[in-house]
Image (cartoon, rainbow, N blue to C red):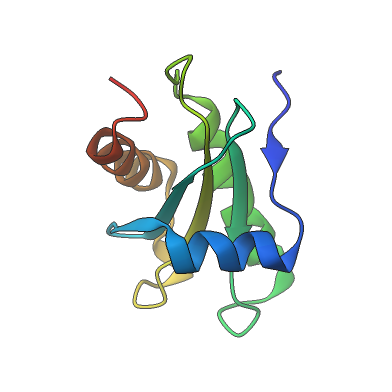
Length: 113
């Protein structure tokens, strides 16, 4: 399995939120910002007020699994932050809906073909 580079520092997330573009899907909100590293980096932010740790980790696993299913352009290098839409119940989370949200977002910003 290929390693996923992640955003770790708070200023990296804030940079993507303030300067990036976003797409609001049915279950996931996706933020994009081009970077200079030559590879994609992702960050996942799910509020602790939304649910307990077990459900938050399940959401993170579903988002990472659906992200790994995509074949990205060789020239795509961006920072991507995924946020769970607070209007949607956590119990409604499923792989197919998350995958469809990511697919629409990636097509909109030209990361995949």
